[in-house]
Length: 426
Image 1 (spheres, rainbow, N blue to C red):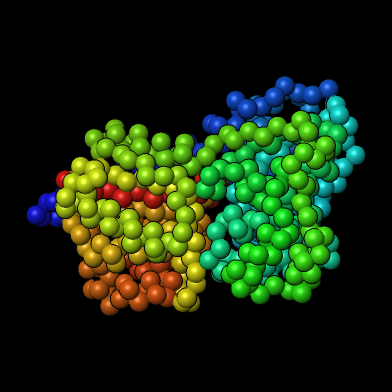
Image 2: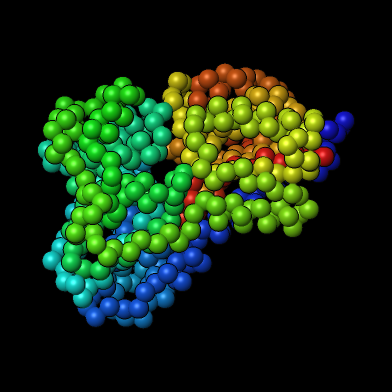
């Protein structure tokens, strides 16, 4: 461990790693190799997610035959297309624009033939953007459940299990509507484990989970849901399309990029700078503040004892943590992780970090994340800010923004989940 603070500011290097991770997940780079030849019949493009508009543009730029379709993306994430209509809607809580878009997507793929091809462009954020309430439910019901799920501390897999069973399009239902057309789903993963059923709640893939599973999650986290929601789950009327369903036979699903690819791109930037990278995992989950404490312990062991890695090195990880809201501050899971990391490190010299969401939005704000330096806590105290109180109030954005340490990218037009890098100097 160094006896003095390092003279080199490592935050620019961390930012280059983050930018490389985002660049590696751009649809223009990773989508074209997966396109099939044009079909005998029509080609219909549909999609939902934060990256869906950029995916649509990449498809248009590399498609030789006739093309039509509609995709729905988050407000501010639209990309101009000529033949594919781009609709914008709300995320993470759905709105009427998303509902109307989902209805139009259903109409587009109804009544197709076996000669037709549907290309579904699916990425993170599609769960709220492709909002199609199940039988007996309203948009208000879906909004209430989404809000409650986001505050519950449930994992993304658990949240999407509930969402699938409250939808008329997710959990394979959209693919069933496309039958007998050919369906090719191109996925950009934003979920731990890269399971297609959890990306936008799996509108074009079979779902092995059940209404009973969804109801158990609601009860486990004591989520207050509207009566119509509980009734739908208890009755089993919200059941999804299961593996082996003949309407899904022959459907193709391709993962075009994922968190691991983004982390490998960041690792190469570190190597080029003479820093050894270690990818600890692309699917780390759990409470953001708990992961922050754990990662602080590893970083301290590296800095003080040279175990399990020798410094200088950078610890990279991805995945999606959760935040159980306790306070009323402005935050997101990445800044919650980073603030917890800062408190646990307590100004340890030679340790820098960046945590950010690759879609450019951490929580509900247009802020991707933030950076941490050895002077973070001292600067906060000088401003009269108590770091632990900020953490208790879930006020990560307020904390780092006051220091000028927020990471703001604007819409990145992709989404491979969270990016975390902790650099430990020798």
